[in-house]
Length: 442
Image 1: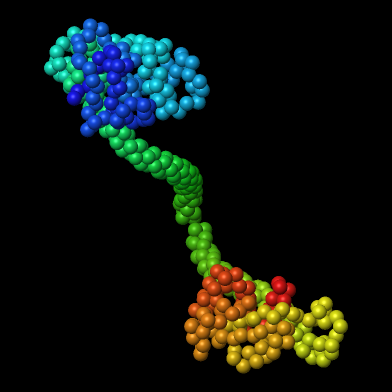
Image 2: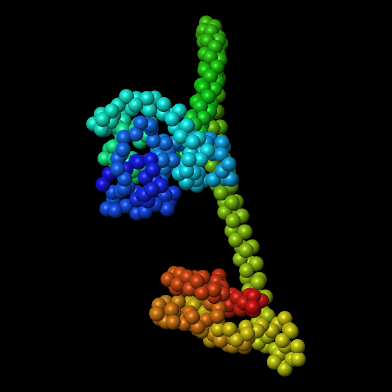
C-alpha cells in the first residue's frame, strides 16, 4: 500500500517505519514487507505540507538530503540546543530529526529555511499538476543529479499522490545507500591519492635536491672552463711572444747555440724526471711498509696485553694449585686467589681433547662441574643439543671449533639467557682467564 500524507494521519494513526541510516526514528514501527503503510484516505489539499506534518520516518530523509552540515550548525546556533558546539555531525543530525517532529520553533525555523533555500523549485513544482507531470519533473531532477530542491518541493506539493510519494521516498532512500558506497570508494581513492601525493612530494624534494646539486656542478664546471679559457688565452699570448722571440733568434747565429743548450737541458730534464719517479715509487713503498709495520706493532701490543692477562690468570691458577695449605686456610672464602664457581656446570665446546683433563681438574677444584663437547669432530650435533640445556655456562675457543657449533651455541645462549664466553684460543691460560671472568660475573 502506498504512503499516505494526510495531515492528521501522524497523530491519529501510528505510522510504520522505513529503515533509516540513523536511529533517529527508533520510536516508529517496523514496515511490513519493505512497504510503508499508513492508514487513512488520500485527500487533496490546498496547502503545502509542513515539515512537522510528515510521518516521523520522513524527517531523517528530509534533514539528511535537503540540509548540509554547515546549515545544520548555522540553524543550531539559533536554537536552545545544549552543548551545540560539542555535538558530532551525527548527533546534530539526530537532534534536528527529533526536534522537527513537533510544530515548535525549531520545526518552523527549519521549514522557513527550506522554503527560502528551495524557493525556485517550490515555484517550479507549483505549476506542475498531475501525477505523470510531477513524476516526469522528478525524473529530470534525478537524471541531473541535483535532487535536494526537487525532493523538498515535491514532498510538500499538495497534489502529491501516495504512489508517487512512495516511489520518490524509496529512490532517495536507495540514493543514500549508493552515496555511502560511493563515499567509501571516494575515501579509498582519496587515501591512495594522498599516498601518491606524499610520494610525489618526496620525489619533488629529491628532484629539487638533485637539480641543486647539478646546478652547483654546472656552475663549478663553468668556473673551471672559464679558468681554463683564461689560462689558454695567457698561453696563446706567451706562444705568440715566444714565436716572435724565436724568429728573432733564428736571424742570429746565437740560435744554434741555444738549440744545443735546449737539447742538453731536455736530456737533463728527462733524467731528473726518471729519478723523481723512482724516488716517488720508493717513497710509496716505504710508506706502505711503515703502515704495515705500524699495524703489526699495534696487533702485537694487543696480543702482548692478551698474553699478559692470560699469563697472570695462569700464574694465579698455578699458585692456587701449588698451594698445599689453601684448603686448610681459614680465609679461603674471602681470599682473592680462591675462585669459586658455585657448583655451576661449565660446558666447553671445541678445543683440544688432551687439554680437557687439565681443564676438568681446574673446574672441579674451583667447585664446578666440567662438561665437554669436541665441537663437531667426533661428537654429533644431536649430542650438543642434548647437553646445552644442562650447562649453566658455555665456554668456546674460537680457533678450534666448527662454525656450525658456534652458531648453535650463540643461538641457544641468546634465547635461553645462558652466559657465553668466547676464548681467543684453545689454551690453559685462556681457559683460566675465562674462568676468572665467570667467577667475577657470578
